[in-house]
Length: 167
Image (cartoon, rainbow, N blue to C red):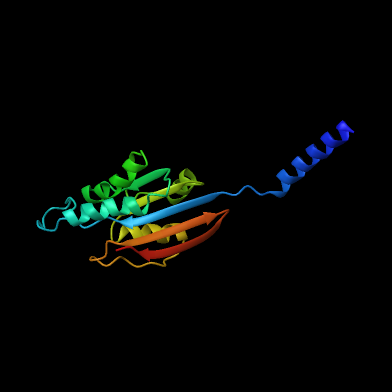
């Protein structure tokens, strides 16, 4: 009888492992940098304004319940300063990326099954989202808009996306 019960237990364990497909979920959050200092039109790498610093802190509060595996930022003061409060809360170093030199397949492979925040710019953020989606869905962000949040979720190859605006 013990052998029979053991046999049934092993059989059920084996069959349940075959019937349950391994689920892989990848989630990407994309935001544009917060408000930058526009006082010097010649400065190509400005820092955030006080309003921008407050927005960066606000993003970290919005993402308080999200456990990020990595946080990507372009190599500009405004994007790094926007990403840093969330990175600090997650005890992560920023991963710097160049939006025009990023290899899609390598990025997807490196981030599969993870939760990632990507901070970019008014043109590169929608471009990156469109690249992940595989088609052009989103246009450049209006220069006065620093509150768009794009979310892409990939579950076993099925992709869904959503755009929200956070004030």
